[in-house]
Image (cartoon, rainbow, N blue to C red):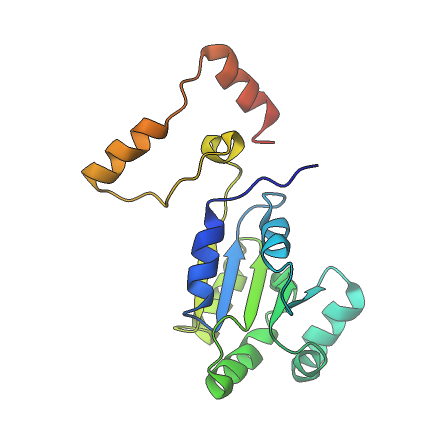
Length: 176
C-alpha cells in the first residue's frame, strides 16, 4: 500500500528541533507508527516496540538498562505499556539537552498522559493524530488549522467539493 503523507509531519519535524521528546498520541490504527517510521528513514534513529513482550518487560522492570540498550535517537512505540520510562527519559533530557532524542507513540490513555505531564513537563511536545483528513486523502498539503481570516480564505481555495455519494463512500471507507 502506498504511503499517504500526513499534515502532522511538518509539525513533528519542527517540534523535534525544540523538545527532547515528542509524543504522538491518538486512536489505534490512525498511522502514528507508520508516519514516524517514514520520517525516520535515512536517519540514525532506531525503533523499538513495547508490543514486544521482552522489550516491554525490560522497560518496565529496568528502565535505566532499557535506555542503555536503546540509545537515542530512538522511536519507542506503544510507550503507554511502560510509563516507568518517563522519569528516566526526563533524566536523560535534563543531562543531555538533545532536541528530538525521543519519539514516542501511545494511545490516549489517561494514566499515561498523566505520567507524561508529571514526569516530562516542559520536555515533551504532545501531538494528537486523528484519522486521515480529506485533504490528506486527496494529496493536498494543508497547514495546521488556525483562526485567521486570511488563512481560512486560503484554505477555502483548496477545498475539494464533494457530492453526497462521495461523502457516503468516505464515511463507509472510514478514512482509509
